[in-house]
Image (cartoon, rainbow, N blue to C red; front, side, top):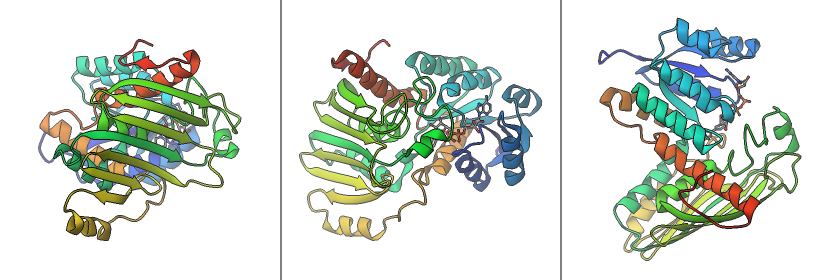
Length: 347
Ligand SMILES: NC(=O)c1ccc[n+]([C@@H]2O[C@H](COP(=O)([O-])OP(=O)(O)OC[C@H]3O[C@@H](n4cnc5c(N)ncnc54)[C@H](O)[C@@H]3O)[C@@H](O)[C@H]2O)c1
């Protein structure tokens, strides 16, 4: 590929999250949005009109007719892996929305197929690119926490019956999962990114208020291989609206608490002799994003473009994306068996 040549993108699934993909691609100089696809023709057409791309109602046809370098897949969650596998076999690089698959088996098949086809695979956990999270990660890499003791991932959001009624796949076991798999997966990914790898998991889930097949409340405790402990609390039942998505990490010589509506604001930053740094961080905080999706889609697409250009792995490749999925599937298993699950485990 020529150095100045733009990478040609296509989006599959023109629903709620797709505008984040389209706007990010369009904003990047090194990318262009060539085609979009949705099985609902009006959705494909309206989206194509808005973002000046070519509409398709079949991704197979789109990938046959257009020369596409990268697809971003934003359909119902159970379709991410099969569509990604199809695209990979066509030699197209793959970006999938979270969760990358609904089972570990299909996640593994997607990872394997992309490797065999020699294409890159990136999983969209955009919150890893939040400024606040990047600062935390840097502090961890520099060993500033000393011995890590414990951490928490908390989602207190509201998804009402109207939200779940928007589409038949929402809240279902096969296509979506509950609040852990859909809403909390980003935060679980962050917790394991900071403290992982995970040794064991125990958790409970319940469907407390919403009329859905899967959980609207989930809690879990994690034991990490380094001895640290973790707590997950996830709820889509919070009255009356989204309150917070929080990540807390504690160690012998460090405490960081990131809050805001979507892990975007540092609330606590404590290390030895860090007063000046702390004031600087607090003075340059981003304000809350307009929605809980945050600002990270652009960064993660940018990273994919660089990964292709430099022929390196994307920051969140298939193996990275699989980690949070494994934890959540393990929590679902705990709910069934009432026993802790040791990782890695067979489904
Ligand atoms: N990264 C994030 O923060 C974030 C936020 C929201 C949603 N998501 C994920 O994005 C995915 C989509 O969520 P959404 O809320 O946009 O859902 P949605 O229901 O609004 O959109 C999904 C779209 O995919 C289309 N579709 C279904 N099958 C298709 C096919 N075979 N080919 C082409 N299009 C097809 C549907 O018609 C629909 O328009 C989910 O997996 C969800 O978990 C991620």
